Image (cartoon, rainbow, N blue to C red):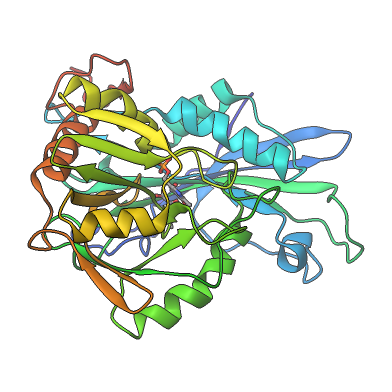
Length: 360
Ligand code: PLP
Ligand code: COI
C-alpha cells in the first residue's frame, strides 16, 4: 500500500503541549483511508488532523456501525519509541470489523501505517510517565437510511498525548466503584467482546448517574442473571486473595478480551503470583472482601493501566479494600508492566517493538 504524505506547512503546525488531559489534544498528523464496496481500500494518506465532512445520512450517525481500538506509544529512556503488542490491537481491530459487518484491514499493513504516522512526528510521544494514546477507528460513512451494511467506510488513526486516565485515583488512591444491578453493558450474543462504540454509549447513562453519587466507575454484571462479575467501566477486572492469588472473570463472550489482562495472565505467574480465570459470583466476591480474604481489586486496561479499587458499593453496602489505596500486588504488577512498556525493564516476552527515531 502506498501512503500519500500531505505535508503541513511549518506555520500551521501546533507545538507539542507540555500539559494535557486524557484524550483532548491531538497530534498534527493523522492517517486515513477510504473503502468502497467492490473497489476495496484506497486513498491512504497521512495528513493534517482536521474535521472531516460527512453526510447527515451517514450510516454511523444513525445505526452506530463503527468500532475503535486503543493502544499506546511509550518514550524509552534512550529516546526511541516502544509499541506494546500493537499487532494484537490490529488483530482485535479485525475481529471488531467482522462482528460489525465491516471490511478488515491487513494487520501487517495496519502496523506499518502506525509506524509511519509516528515517524513523521516522533516529538509527540511524551516522556514517561505520559504516553501517546493511539486510536484506530472505522466508521460507516455512506448515505443510507435503510438498515444494512454500508457500502463505504473510513478507517483512520488519531494520536493523543495522555497523562493519567483518571483525574484522581487509581494509582495511589483506590477508585470508588458502584456495582450496577439493573442495567448491563453487554449480553450473550451481543457485541460486548468487540470494541463497538455502541457498547460505550449504552454505559454512559449509568456512569453519569453514579458519578453524581461520588463513584468513579461502574462494576458491570452479566446480562442474564446480574450475578457474575464482568468488567469495571472500560476495563477488565481482577481480585487478589491474600496478597498471592489473582482471579479475573473468564472470557464469556460478553467481556472484551483485553490485551493488558492477557499480558497479566503471563506476567503475574512469572512474578510469583497464581492467576486464574473463573466465573466470579458477585455475592461471593463481596463476602470475601468483607472477610478480608480479598486484599486488593484493580481495573486493567490500556488507558488506565492498573487502577486500584478502594471501595465497592453493592446493594447499598460499602465493601472497602484495605486502606483504600493501591496495594502491593497492584503496584508490583503496574511497575513491572509499565517498566516493560517503557523499556526500563527487559521484555522477555517479545511484546515490545522499538521504533528507532534517534538514529543512534
Ligand atoms: N474492557 C473494555 C470495555 C475496554 O474498552 C478496554 C479497553 O480497551 C479493556 C477492557 C481493556 O483492554 P486492553 O487491555 O486491550 O486495553
Ligand atoms: C482503552 O483502555 O484503551 C480504552 O479504549 C478505554 C477508553 C474508554 C479510553
